[in-house]
Length: 379
Image 1 (tube, rainbow, N blue to C red):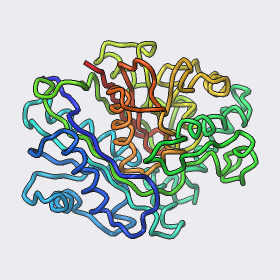
Image 2: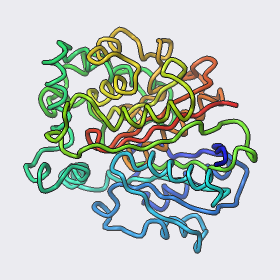
Image 3: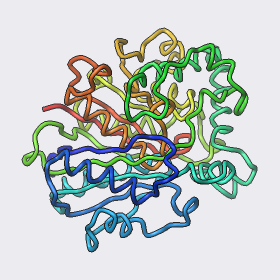
Image 4: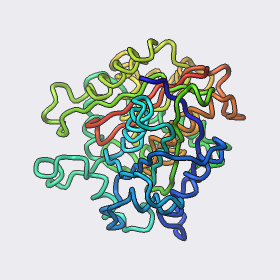
């Protein structure tokens, strides 16, 4: 198996550009990645998208996006794995290059959510849950996370405010980020006085509806030096929380993380920068713990104490995360990869974590039914 490098990255500003469609967003990110790599050749295209079939009524996105970037005829396929779609597509791209089947693989993700009514988006976001057993009850994705939030409070004695700090920390990091949806500070007081979304989760603890696209160009490490893919893994778990032995342990996150550490020959203490899923604050806390960066039940307290700040022990979501940078779900995993690359290149400006050499990006679908983990290394 060949070593794989990230040759180029590109992305759009996250927001609600009503005047632009999925093809335009994807093309901007994809062409930016090719320009960044100073390379035009592509052997294979992977398109990460979660909700296009539901929200735009659009399937066949592989062929459509190949056409959008002026490459009709290119082998192209859509990858769907809920909110983990971008990370899973990245994993497929890495395998294509590592195997020797392809030399230049473009992995792009796109999502367009803002044009639809809230009830349509909410229904689509619940798509990764088991439809006949869970979703039919009417529970939302946030509602399922609220169950975990309440259980975490009960089992470990964490306060809602301690968990709420995950959102405030993300907003601190988003200040000045040009591509962020919400590039401003958010006090813990504002978080905890915002309207209730799904008790005990408040509105300002949740990622908002967002549109965006991100892309990376992969190639053999012998061709492009700089950022090497040290590991790329995917794992799954029971869709239903009721089927899990311990709902507060995200087994897919643990399995993907453990395998990634083994592949990269590193441990959590070796990671300099981290991107985790925080579409709700409790998801961020649980991800931090199950990746091995905090003892089970201690993650919320550590976040409240500054553990995840840019100058803290484990700088996390350094461009704002899903809450503040934004969460165009199918593309989010690729935003995480691109932002990790920016940090490892030392090009993050005011958001730069000093001497960052190894970065991890974790993307998660639902409440942990699918998880992807990538470890990148500056070489």
